[in-house]
Structures are given as structure tokens and as C-alpha cells.
Picture 1 (tube, rainbow, N blue to C red):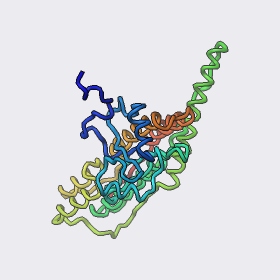
Picture 2 (picture 1 turned 90 degrees about the vertical axis):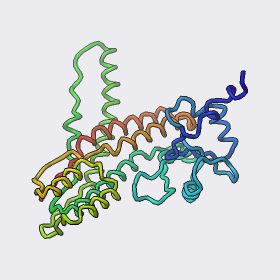
Picture 3 (picture 1 turned 60 degrees about the horizontal axis):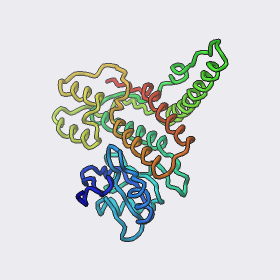
Picture 4 (picture 1 turned 180 degrees about the vertical axis):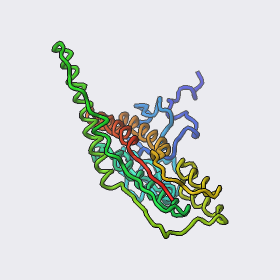
Length: 297
């Protein structure tokens, strides 16, 4: 057999399969070899995370700027990081999504998701000012409790009742987390603007406004696009309510999934942590249905 074929999957994958937006950190080459080569931690993953060995002279799949930026954050052994999703973040900026072994692999998904939503709202605010809108509000409806009300358990055998209790407990934990998540968002995610004397849209500067929207990373946002289209036609924007366009969060959630899958391989994820991640995913699904935006001229 050709000697190259004896290499493990992690070693023979082409560099193009590495996702440099996700980074697995290892203290030294021994740690890297233990998990990547011996335990084949990357085998079967849809994409490979970049590897970064902290020890001097250790391997690094990142560019020099990315490595420099991550080193400034003092990453711990077997922590997992993603590139900052803010389009205006500094080059080489990474944020931790899962803490390392020193911190027992704590999950940071919820904080990142809330921060990204708030950043998105601020960028929308700036885009609407550039578009000359007079009034808008971005907020979270209080719908979780209504949409997640569980029906009372019916009569049945002891085994059936036990299954219902267990299922209800799991659903209840996810619902409770979603309600807390939603409550926090309602307290911190309510951006309102009402300025009847604000600056008007200058149709002669469409290109400048479009450039600003692109800088904000909102050129594909449905609400921004519809307002821009109305402006180009010289139409007023009538009062309208929308669900916040959350397609942008899809890539973020994919990175979370890959990071958690990797954590299960290099951090020996506990059942408790699995439950926390499941509840977070459920909470995001619920909250996504209640983030709204109102715009009008």
C-alpha cells in the first residue's frame, strides 16, 4: 500500500477544507497529536477547524495577522474560537465560543448570539438614518410563554406517565431557558427612533447610500432592500411590520454546531453541557419568531 494512504484523515486533508473562521487551540504539539492524530478529532467533520498550538514554534493554520490577533486574547488549551462576526471587526479578531479545559469548557453561545443581534440592530439603525426613514422600532415580542404553553398530561399507564414527565421536564427546561433568553433580549434589545425632522433622502446620492449599506453588511437584508427600492422609485415607506431578517444568523449557527461537535471530541462534553446546548438551540428557534421590526415614513 502506498505510504501516503496510511496517513490518518486529519493529516491528509487538503488545506482547502480548513475553515479558518473556527479555531481549535492546543497548548503544545503533544496535545495536538493526542487529539488530532491519535483520537482523530477532525475525522468525519464537514469542515476542519484551523489548529493553533500556543507553544512557541507550534503549528498554526492561521495567517500571521490572525495568529497575532488570537495570541493577544491569551487563549487556553482546548478552547474553541470563531472569527468575530461583526463585519467591522478588526482583522484577526476572534471571540471564544467554548472555554478550554481550565474553565471546564463553558459555553458562550448565548452571549455571542445576543451580542450579534444587538450589533445587527445598531447596523440597521445606521442604515435607516442613511435612507432617511423617519421612524422605526426593533424589538422582541413577548410570545414565548404563549407559544410554548404545554398541555396537561393525560391519563395513562405508569410507564406512559413517566415518559410524559421526562419529556415535559426536558421541554420545560428548554422553555425556561428560552423565556430567560427572550426576557434578557427584551430588556436590552429595544431600539426606537422617531425624528420627524431628520435628514431626508437625497436621491442624487444613491451610490453613496448603497456603499454605506454594503459597509454595514446589509445589502441582502430584506427590509433595508425594500426601503432602498422605495427610495429609488421616489415612494414613501408606508407603516409596516416585519420579522427581523435573521438569515444572517444561519452561518453563525453552523459555526456553533461545528464548534460544539468538535468540543465533544476534545473536551469530553458532559451530558449537562449537551443539555445546555440543546436548550440554547431551542431558545434561538423560539426567539427568532419574536424579533420584530416596524418602519415608516
